[in-house]
Image 1 (cartoon, rainbow, N blue to C red):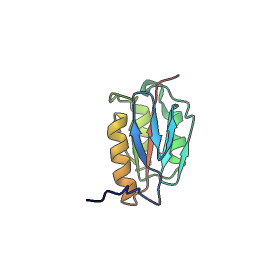
Image 2: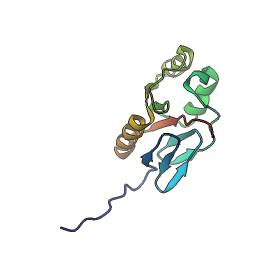
Image 3: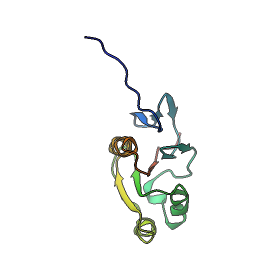
Image 4: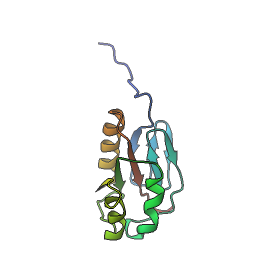
Length: 125
């Protein structure tokens, strides 16, 4: 039996999630970042879900998502209600999960051509 590597094309995808990093295609990122199918915005200034507030909503909405996925590290941690409400007021859905689940969900939706944006929170240095 022949095996071949099937890489998704046409969007950025998550290959691996670790405790302190996320690998996009072949590039390992060690700082929190935002991810859309067509671009990654590195060095997102967020270290914990507790640090998120209404001021962080605009950075995610600027990427014009229909759905936001928030990966909060190794464990699911819900951010402040003001953060979540910022999306709901604009009619944009938001789901909060751990980084591994966020990566799987993002890859699935991006592969379907959906306009999904993910925020991955990674612990500092």
